[in-house]
Figure (cartoon, one colour):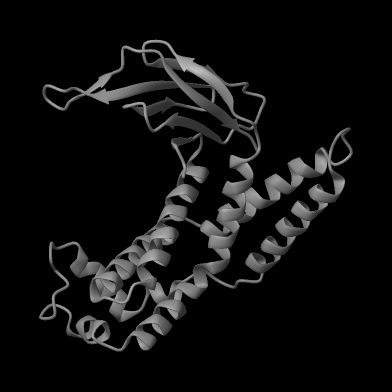
Length: 256
């Protein structure tokens, strides 16, 4: 059992979008595996959120840029002392394989699904509270009432265009999260500040806190300096207040 809660703070917009998509992909997989109508509604709702992010961002280009950047950084340290060359080459091979799949994709990812009448209708009605009832969207209601094998097959078909991006984002974020070892720190009176070397490509701040400590981490700042405040809920009015105690935690400033 995991006894810590980890809070992450992305240091640029690209990683921020990747983490949002990671969460949405996880939710989609969870709900798509459920067999109730409520599960399928939730899966479709999450898929619409994924599609919305893809409409606003050129995700294929952003992911390829990040994969190329990581490959370039790793290539520069290939001949450094102490580097596990076999492990490094394995990582570079994985990067190349993922990039090759994405380069092979023609056009905007998921464009056919985004432009389908069904999804456009659901997206329009979803802005209205309770707006996807059977009398609003009989076609959607009809699909929800189909047997599970058909619904599962459709969900797999609709999500297939996003699989390679999902794989790439998982690889990128996992690599970033494990790029540095954590350090043990103490936030005096619930406050801690980090200064980051501007010559290093920091991507993400991770703060892990033991679940027995009744606080949560509130992180703010940018790529040069970050502030961490450990907040707790006031017993009187349930408002957020900064802790007055010294809070032990682990800090990871993730590179690459």
